[in-house]
Image 1 (cartoon, rainbow, N blue to C red):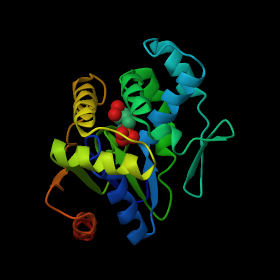
Image 2 (image 1 turned 90 degrees about the horizontal axis):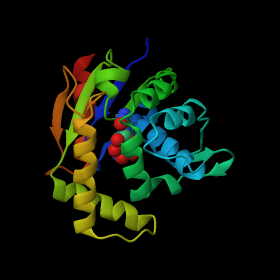
Image 3 (image 1 turned 120 degrees about the horizontal axis):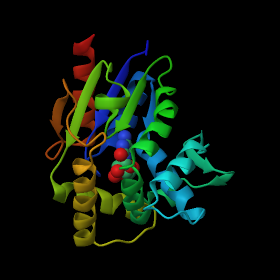
Image 4 (image 1 turned 60 degrees about the horizontal axis):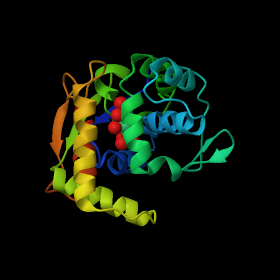
Length: 218
Ligand code: C5P
């Protein structure tokens, strides 16, 4: 793509979403939350009672996915699903269908089309490795499992969803394992990615570091 892309990849609840929106806001860039597309596909499969172990069926759902992102809200077939896609169940199901090459292929163009002026911050698992290999800056954002579980706990609490830290640690480890072990677009630092461990950093410090690296890259 012609425009600048900042790719931010990393495991579950590493803070990709908050860091990406902070960076995008500072630069007035667009944001691509690629995980939302996998979550939307999973939710659409669940709504249509599609068997999640049926790769071909999930691929069809991904091909006809037509989500609307508007004013910070997400709609699927005319229904607002902004919060509905954030549950742990949808996250786990998303990681199942994300392992199917056909699903990833179906969502590829949708993601590429987000790279428009003045620039894009793309967050996910394979933004720097597969979807935007030409990205100006690639970040692999990590944090300890404990700080990630705490972060997820607070996110869910804010949304009025109650959860349990131990369950969250085991969920995120499950999901990370599936994301790292799949043969297509596995979660790993892209070539040329800078590793950023946010465990001891505040959100603002993390955002500032990404912005500094971006300025350096120019
Ligand atoms: O980032 P988020 O937790 O919303 O992503 C949900 C799931 O979607 C991940 O666990 C992963 O399996 C999948 N995903 C992916 N590639 C991306 C973004 C998300 O495989 N670029």
